[in-house]
Image (cartoon, rainbow, N blue to C red; front, side, top):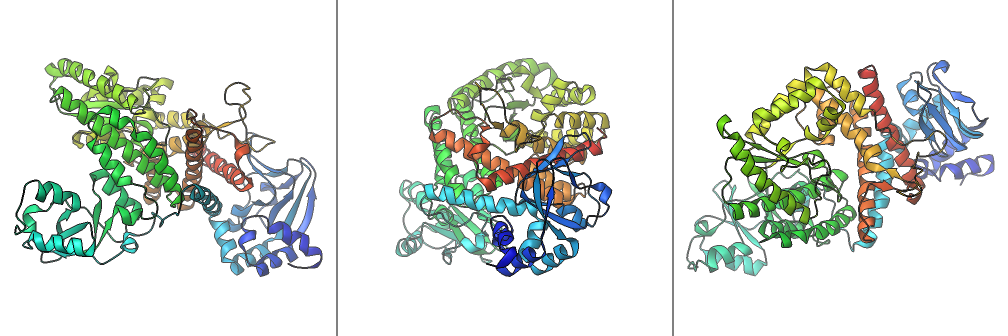
Amino acid sequence: MPAGPIQPIAEFLNLHAPFAQMSAEDVEYLAKRAKQVFFADGDVICGPEDGVADRLFIVKEGLVRGGEAGGEAAWELAPGECFPVGALIGKRAMRVANRAAADTFCLEIAGEDFFELLKRSPLFHDFCTRRMANLLDDALRNIQAGSASRVAEAGASLDTPCSRLIARSPYSCRFDTPLRDALGIMARERIGSMIVVDEERAPRGILNLYDVLSRVTLPALPLTTQIGEAMNPDVLTIGPQQAGYEAAILMTRHGRDHICVVDEQCRLIGVLSERDLFALQRVGLVSLSRTIARAEDIDELATKGRDIHRLVDRMIAQGASVDQLNKIITELNDAITQRVIELNLADCGEPPAPFVWLSFGSEGRVEQTLKTDQDNGILFIAKKEEKSAIRERLLELAGRINRDLARCGFPLCPGNIMASNPDCCLTLKEWKKRFAKWIEQGTPEHLLYATIFFDFRPLHGDETPVRELREWLAGKVAKNSRFRQQMAVNALRNRPPLGLFSDFRVTGDKHEHPHTLDLKLHGVTPFVDGARLIALANEVGETNTLERLRAAVNKGALRGSDAEAWIKAYQFIQLLRMRNHQRQADLEQPLDNHFDPDQLDELDRRILKEAFRQARKLQNRLRLEYQL
């Protein structure tokens, strides 16, 4: 620890990110060059009138507020936070003024010392250029450590490439290998599957322990039978650089417990099992999916919601990202929905016409958390003279499906956005007509519907008409600037809850959700609405919020740095929602999106504030682009 007058400064810096993680030499370098300055409440510390930014400030005591053109606070900075980093690095003037919101002490560092520290310290450089990402990384480590204390022995990260998850060299054989030989190897080596390959070592089939029962024992095949006659030809494959969670989703989707890792020439290089992906967790993702797919009735399906809750906690401990968690939860919810549809079709017989079951809202975006209700519809194929009769029969089927989904833990939609509503059971032509009306008229009700319905995705049936509807919608919205402007106005309604003189603007209701933030309405929704509008304006076909932002970057519609900050902010708020739902589930409370920020530690409070600031930056971009 440095001695003398710089010691208190160094001790202060060591309490806050990123300085706490920097080397002692770099902290000492900064402490020696920092000058403590005082600003009275209301003083302007720095602003656009100063010209190109030439100093870094670190809040030591007090509070600093950044202002918007309309006088509303855009952000608040507490002790340990730096400003104006973006203007300094960009060598530009600040866009807004920073004022002391109380009597405030700051550490002031000259611009040349700031840039020298950027060169000296890779960690400081990374923090300044990827501020939101680094803050979130710190928070995720804390969150995962907390979840790991509840879940014994966290396993390998699901971000790990599949090639690094392979535990042993794969066992394979040719089509003409006798069953006796193949089963002998499986027993001797204690492996759960045998891969059947062709002359180029490309996987063509698989025989696992379950297959032995259904394909060998029950049909009473002689052990002299060639394995090619008994194998399951439906073998899953994945590339070596794809992440473990992608393998898990594929296995879940297809109800399989093995997947082959293949190189660019489709040659077998390894086999992953559910045990390899979740060896230390006993997560049972694929087992849970298989149980759902084989459920014989709705009562059995209804018990699976609790298993999904337990799974999420283990996934967080294992290092799964929010994006992965959303996709896995949605994948399992999809599986439940698909099984409910299958069971009802088995009871009711063949449907009167081909139909597609559509999901809307968060399920359509593949962004479901543990709290979700039903938003669904039907797209069916029929001749004009048959429409009414077919619709009537499909509505009856949809009513059964909606009620059964409610029994499985998906509450009926309060707004009746469900397939059993005649307005949500339409032909392709009718869906286009309905969407066109919303786009051309743009009433408040139409804009609300657009935020739900335009995120559609097929869950059952032929996807061809859905792709046609998606392409038609993208072109229709891209050509209608008035409707996009109306969507922008709508996207600005839910402002992030940052207060003027306190960290957060919490609800003042003493009876219902007192002193809380609505993490969905005021946290997640600004990112979802903004990403949807950006995607529609640029004819991006994705429905997932993060994929929409990434696709917009690829099209040149967004800067990569802006998209990365918004993605990280969205992920953090979503993670807080999941943690809140887990806590409520543990306490057997109803799940909601209201959250008391006083539950957060200092780091998490700081990151949540930054996440809300990023939401405001996204909204400010829409405001400028659409001149609002």
